[in-house]
Image (tube, rainbow, N blue to C red; front, side, top):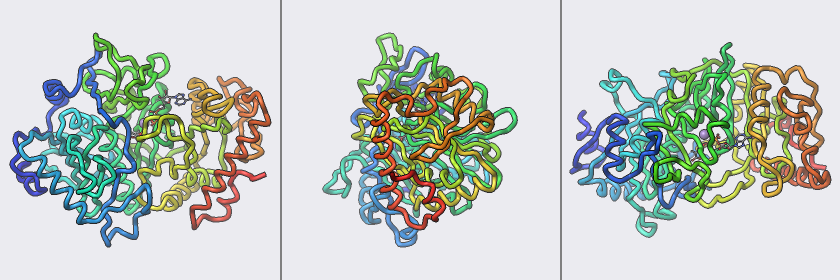
Amino acid sequence: MSIKDFLQNVGISNTREIHHNLSAARLVEHALKRGEGQLTSTGALNIKTGKYTGRSPQDRFIVDYPEIHKSINWGKVNRPIDPEVFERIYARLTAYLQNKDLYVFDGFVGADRRYTHSIRFINELPAHNLFVRQLFIRPTEEELNKFIPQFTVISAPYFNAVPEIDNTNSEVFIILDFVKRIVIIGGTHYCGEMKKSIFTAMNYLLPQLNVLPMHCSANVGKDGDVALFFGLSGTGKTTLSADPNRMLIGDDEHGWSEDGVFNFEGGCYAKCINLSREKEPQIYDAIKFGTVLENVVLDDKGNPNYDDDSLTENTRAAYPIDYIPNAVLKGVGGHPKTILFLTADAFGVLPPISKLTKEQAMFHFISGYTSKLAGTERGITEPQATFSSCFGEPFMPMNPVLYAKMLGEKITKHNVNVYLVNTGWSGGPYGIGKRMNLKHTRAMVTAAISGDLENVKYIEHPIFKVLIPMECPNVPTDVLNPINTWSNKEDYNRYAKELANKFYENIKKFSGISDDILEAAPDLI
Ligand SMILES: Nc1ncnc2c1ncn2[C@@H]1O[C@H](COP(=O)(O)OP(=O)(O)O)[C@@H](O)[C@H]1O
Ligand SMILES: C=C(OP(=O)(O)O)C(=O)O
Ligand SMILES: [Mn+2]
């Protein structure tokens, strides 16, 4: 079917020029010509996304059909929308796209070809089309010749919904239709919406194929030892998985099948606030021609000022994974040996690293205690403690316990070591304490992955019951036990107990959790 016929079939008629699978170079030219962005001194395309510089979770809906009703975990995260309401907004959106140049990218999600889904992205903006081209898996010429889309994404940032007509909360909408396999996005220019809606779709589709979808980064050592880093947005998945001594599999979304793990994407999406070559060399050097930057402030020579947060804290860079030296281009690896749960603890009471029993791992995965970091979601301006199940609740359409059970089985079967890593605050809560030293976090992660932490003595945390290593190579011993970093020990205990209470209150939300997992909860004293 020709692309024109395809568009006609999905209701987009009277199109002008359809730019189908343009190269990165051509897309950059189009974006510049249309005034969508500027080139930086290293050749990246920097765009400003206007009012919305992070995700809009209140504006994300799933179409509620009888055939899928039971499988979705409806609520504030997965908001239902009626099929008629969807049809109405869809008709207005496709009418809006008439007489416009459109940019179409045909890509894949899921590096393991048994689970690959093909997606056709229809963009109003060439800069957005460049984003999806860099972030998803780019098919070969041969694959393009026989490409049949299984999912369609239509993104029209200049089309604003009208809440009175469209039943939306605001001018922004992100609507996922799992039955028709269509995603529509309007009213927002933030690129992360396109990425995370496809992630959500995979999180719906893959468990049905007996694959666990995960919000984690993954890398692999020379011996084939795979490590996974779970974490909510901004907690360090991308930063910590970019390690010159290990090969990167992917920085954000993976599946775990009977044969091992595989990346969903073909690119990375790094936060670049306070980025420096010294601290994050691989990411810094990936910002070059072909990379899409969002909301970075440039000087008049085009030099980025990564310390400038005047547009947002959530400045971003999207680049193809091959811009990271040492990446596993096939995007697949074996079963993980180590799992790290990254939590940005705004209370500043969790140890910088601790070892979890299998039951504690399950408890913490279901709890997903962490912080929403500034800028990643609309309205979040400073770190906010939250419980985000699976360390990715905004992207999980089904009951978190279902994903947790799959993870638990895999951890047992493959005898995986699990650690909890606090990439957030120490020495006091957010506002008083300091963000964990990145060099120390890296050294702790290295020690966990290499097995060095298997041969040290541990002490049990009196409240959280997790095991704290008493020593760790290349980390000063006095930072390992969090109470030592607080000047007032009573304050520490007070905050730690407050957090323990929050864990306790939160876990009550879930039903069907076995007693051994509940017993792994922090102690309420
Ligand atoms: N101790 C630490 N560990 C990890 N990241 C840290 C730490 N301290 C500061 N950061 C910063 O936090 C941010 C983590 O973002 P990122 O790795 O992109 O998160 P994610 O990929 O999980 O969304 C980066 O800007 C990084 O420089
Ligand atoms: C892109 C996002 O997060 P992450 O860094 O986890 O990909 C997001 O939450 O919009
Ligand atoms: Mn990331």
